[in-house]
Amino acid sequence: MRKPMTPPMRRYLARFFPAMLAYVGVLFGSLWTIRNLDPKGPLLWALAIAPALPIIAVIAIMGLYLIEETDEFIRAMLVQAMLWGIGVTLAGCTAWGFLENVGLVEHMPLFMVFPVFCAAMALAQPLVRWRYR
Amino acid sequence: MKNRLKVLRAERDWSQADLADRLEVSRQTVNALETGKYDPSLPLAFKIARLFGQPIETIFQDEA
Image (cartoon, rainbow over all chains, first blue to last red):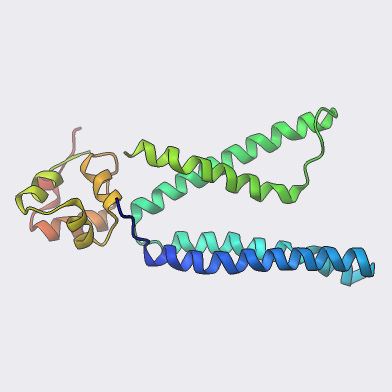
C-alpha cells in the first residue's frame, strides 16, 4: 500500500535532518575544541552547552510537526507514542537511578535521556498503529 | 462508536483512498474511522456530514 507523506511530515524531515547534521558537527567541534584548546570560563560554558542546542531544536521540531499535522488521527497516534516514550523513559531512568545508587549499574549521563525517549517512542509507534488496525 | 461510513462510501462507489482524498486525511485515518476504533473530532465529523449531505447523527450512532 502506497503511503504518501503529508506536507507537514515532509517539512518535519526537511527540518530534522539539517538539525541532526548540525548536532554531529557541533558535537565534534565542541569536543575537539575542549580537548585540544583547553578553554576556560564562559567560553568553556558556551562550548559545553553547544551540542545541546541542536537537540533542543529537534525537540522543538517534533513539537512543530505535532502542531502542523492536519490529520488528527495521525496526530493522536503520535501523541500516544510520545506518551509511551515519556512513561518508559521516566520509569527506566527512575529504576536506573536506584540501581546506580548502590553501584549495580554504571552512571548514565543525562544527555542519554532524550535518545532513550526517542527509542521508546519509536518502539511504541508500531504498537499504537497495531491497536487501530 | 458505530457509524455508517463504509455503507455511505460503498453507495458512492468510493475506495477508502477516494474518501481520504475528499476529507483531506490519510487512508489509515479513514480505515480507523470506519472500523469505529477512532472517533473523529467535531470538525472532522461535520466535514464528513457535509460530504455525504446527511446530519451527523444519521452517520454516527451513539450506543449508550
